[in-house]
Length: 240
Image 1 (cartoon, rainbow, N blue to C red):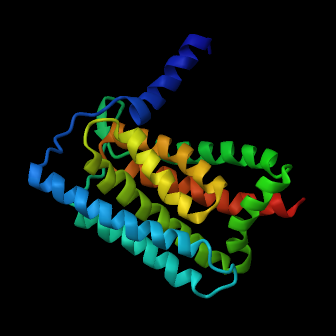
Image 2 (cartoon, one colour):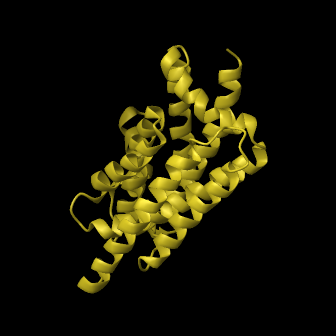
């Protein structure tokens, strides 16, 4: 296939997912907008605190489970309490459809990019130690439960950060602002690798949210990415 045709075909997949904005009517009154901002701010403080605590407990601690479940509950409750949320749609073959396959593929691709970066990071002792501190949760806790918690928190984070918070920001630079806030909340973990991952992931799912007008696409990409990282990275780091 000629290069121009390959490029056009790639754009036909990428643009609806990340660039082209579908028409939607998600207007809210000034009072509803203020309420959403207040609820989002309170949720952010509580959730950021729980995030820092949950990822700084001893790796073998039984407190890991209730803390991470409480964290997911905080994001979900705050997200829905802030106001209406939407699943969103993207243009596919001249029809508006719920985004499922393309965000899943994007999550896998993003996971492969991060895995490639991890192969370089593991050769740097300081950075390797930061990644190891995250992977220890998968080593010391029961893996099926860790997978479930990772999946639930991926959904919960998108409900809040690309749902409630994104809507609370308004129309001026919501992708950039939501990504900065998402990364700032991750600073409470005191792990620079998590902050770096939050920035890159935040930009991608933020673009999906802006394009589709909803949280379904970000949820699928986030969960696919995080589960890929959780299942692939520990064997890579254990092998060295």
